[in-house]
Length: 631
Ligand code: C2E
Ligand code: MG
Ligand code: MG
Image 1 (cartoon, rainbow, N blue to C red):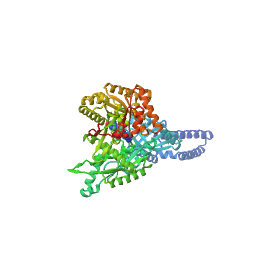
Image 2: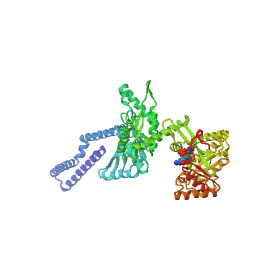
Image 3: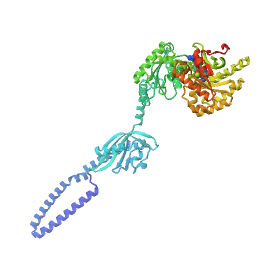
Image 4: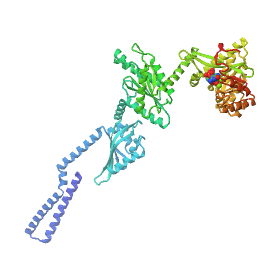
């Protein structure tokens, strides 16, 4: 409470007025009571005493106001002012931003820190609502919870993301208080906040350090485990698989010992970079410690894929590492474990990969091993085959063998089928069943088939020149190529380049290739037929042909699959099927050709059934052109 000068003057005036009134009234009353001068004098003295008493009572009653006005009040007033000044100074110099709104939520005051943090000037925000600073990062429930806390507890504090004038959003730690006046009525809200973006950043940096290897910048074991668990959960949900590869550098210790840890560290860094290059995005690569790296390939569903990935890593790491004038050679061993085949938990997957790694190390290093042993050999062979097949093509390791086809009616060789072989430097003669599927998957089949086609045509030209009487040379066409428009051009080129009469060339396509997309097949067959070549359906009986469709195909020959010939002449089912096929082919004006004839009685049975052509070990195995037996 403080008394202004005006208040004091008003009070003094009132007092003087009341005193005059008192004295005037008492004088009137005294004169009305007596004219005796002595009595009047006594009366006046009593009056003065009464006035003094009343004045004293009055002064006592309003002593606080008087004290306030004189001296003490002045001192108290100056303390108040001081406090206010200090509050204002604190308010303005505090590092925390302060924002005051009235009870309606309109901003009435902000401090300097507020302006520094938010980038807004005072005049830009006074009269506005704090919602102006919303970042859009919190939903309505978040703000409702703040209002509720203010209404119930009068206070709220927590982390809140707001937007600076620049548009940048940033985190604040904010405390909001509801201020009530003496009567308990809500008068203001005061919000005090600090910018915690730096703290957040530090937190992020800390989190990064906790989860990454400082040398290579790669995720560390902790993060790798975490990712492995996530990947397995995702794989399980999507019914997919994933592969975990554990890689360890071979003899890394000798580099550390021989060249020092600085070189060792640099090499590890370069290994990390190279691995990142090989693996690309979508694969988690981590340094698990020392010279051990982990790879998590979520797209690796199959053993073959994982093996291929491991092999590509091994190959890339074999290339020298050049730095500071040094050329260092290093190799790596890899252990592979697959989810869900080998393990159902991340921990188990890592353990399995570790024992596979041990296997790879004991197998002589610089190789990979799968947790499941049988798979290792299988996958390794497939991966190696794919790599070697390219070399085989370049180094002309492929061969074309020819198998005689006999005319059962005349008992003479009438044609040959060209069958590819791979003369492997270590594995010996590799049959097509072992590499054709791989060539089909890797796309190398186009080159192989084109090469076989040319070789076959060229050989046929040679036989022609030697006067050998052969009605045809049959060449197999992969189902992969059959669906490609390019096939027509390839065949035309082969005929053109070798000069072979098209009527001497027969193309074999499997029944399943034709039936994969009968419309495309129909068009393709017509185009090939235009070239003047003969068309045969290979492995007939295995592809569930629609007979109606078959009728529309411009095909001249059906080759009964050797699976049906094998049971002849005793198996009732085989007999029935072979009979039906022969009857069907004849009714459609096609030639019938039986494959896999191994015994004389099979040949005899086929002849009885009016099957014209036979091929099989009984007549002759596939052999190089020079070894073909001319009867
Ligand atoms: P295919 O076209 O049905 O060839 C017949 C297969 O049966 C050949 O196996 C042949 O050696 C084998 N065979 C012949 N007579 C007998 C017999 O009496 N008994 C038994 N058990 N088998 C016999 P091969 O040479 O291993 O070829 C397998 C398959 O590989 C071929 O089946 C063909 O689909 C494919 N193929 C072969 N050469 C090529 C080629 O140059 N290109 C493409 N795309 N595929 C080829
Ligand atoms: Mg064939
Ligand atoms: Mg066949």
